[in-house]
Length: 278
Image 1 (cartoon, helix red, strand yellow):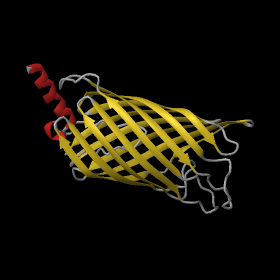
Image 2 (image 1 turned 60 degrees about the horizontal axis):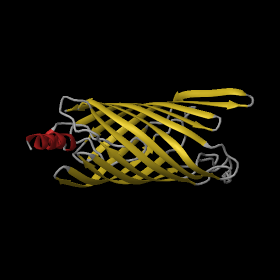
Image 3 (image 1 turned 60 degrees about the vertical axis):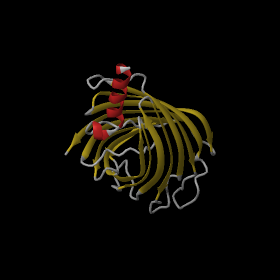
Image 4 (image 1 turned 90 degrees about the horizontal axis):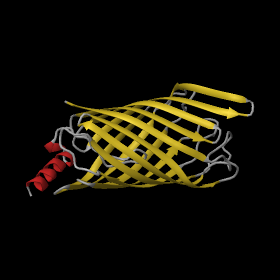
């Protein structure tokens, strides 16, 4: 009985930050979550993203900073460096540069704590800051999203919906609008003691509907957009409550493409997250 009670107490310190200052929230990699770091918390992320799309390979390295203004409101800034290469018939071409930074504000507008679990929902708005660089754009891209989730001692779930809109460039070209619907299930196989490494596994299901984009002159690009379904297994490892290692692979399992296009390949994300407090 004593062991059972001690496990619950340890689990509560994982789930509820007030009982363990600035403890990590566990959230999926490819979708949006309701998580907020808490007032005075400061997160630093180093992220690597690799994606293959037909003959094109894109790699992105990003430094991300998240600051908790209040318990439920957080600002995130991201500064990416992108490298894009294409294995074309004429030979391998590539370009690399600092890409468009982005700013995101997240508001967790509903938060309900119960014994051993928490339910919450959040709204987020994000905008890129155009740089006109070799891998950036001259017009912004906006993203809005709603998310809901449940955190527990053993298991989690998350659901979200996101909409991305890219403003057309001066010549009329633009990527197509995107609508995402995502769901994730997470499990902690073993409740840890405070000095032990915590491990959580997630699996996401991601659905994307992408509308055709625009060509130079504003004509619709009929060879773009479509419907995509992905499954994304992930692992999160926390040696302590100040650092977390994350890794995941997004695997396409169904693709319905408009016109003549190359299929999407795997996307890989690796992150290291550090947490500080003021």
